[in-house]
Length: 238
Image (cartoon, rainbow, N blue to C red; front, side, top):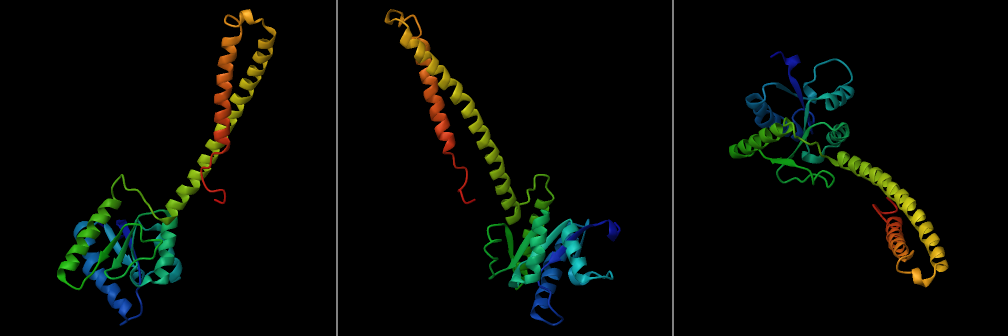
């Protein structure tokens, strides 16, 4: 398969300058864990890190374009690199598959911590084997037809949509309550007026049964209307 025909897996994370601790870390993660996993299990992907982009042009725009357009992004959260989190935020915004990684002994920030991430290490051979196995499983999950993208952005958007839908539902219920409340109230008033005009001898066979039904209906309508008026689907400050 030609390289241009392969899907793109773009790596986000700390890179650092040559001979820095960040570069040594990034190289070990890439060469020991990420690339071998894809080379063995996902040959339809090409794995690219930002410093491996060879096209002429602005580096930052190329990186952002890759973050947006890549079929898959792997984000290394180790060292909490600001650039990495900036790029991760963009990836979350476009709601495309991303796999979070973090080195053993480090914890991701609170906003990311609730979401699935792979804790890895490369100190021992067993660590590398375990990390590759976890990464393989995570990539396979992203390829499943039932895979659901979930991150802080998707959760916030879902909450906003939920509020909007429930606001509409609440208004609909209020409209129905008003529509049922007023006619029943008018009916009960009319029946009450007729009730006072009808002789008591006609009580059992006259309007009394209808009055009772109307009274019960109005009580239910009043109760419904009162409850719906007090519905709180979310805090008033939300």
